[in-house]
Length: 119
Image 1 (cartoon, rainbow, N blue to C red):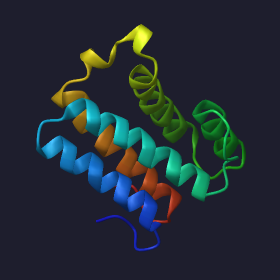
Image 2: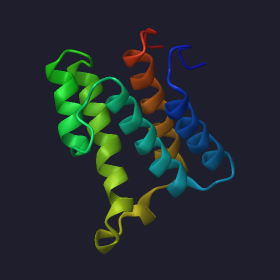
Image 3: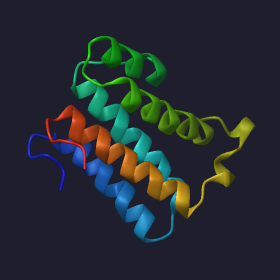
């Protein structure tokens, strides 16, 4: 139920996050949720190659996402960073509850970015 204008690459990453969740690969699901988020932000004009933190703030400043959505996106970013930096291996803390929340939050953000109202 993603908006019809959602780019294929965003949908593919989001679907992989869902598939990972469904097979109880919660760490993989959280990582793919983060990736889908970043794909969507870049598609909507965030500077490619920038840090995700800066991309979120950039779209917030351009009023493409509101303050609450930016806060949610930062939460996804922070947990996604756990998987990117094994020296701080907090990825082990990601469980079913977090992975489900990440999917729900990324879906909300995708809907906001591609013109479908939040549910």
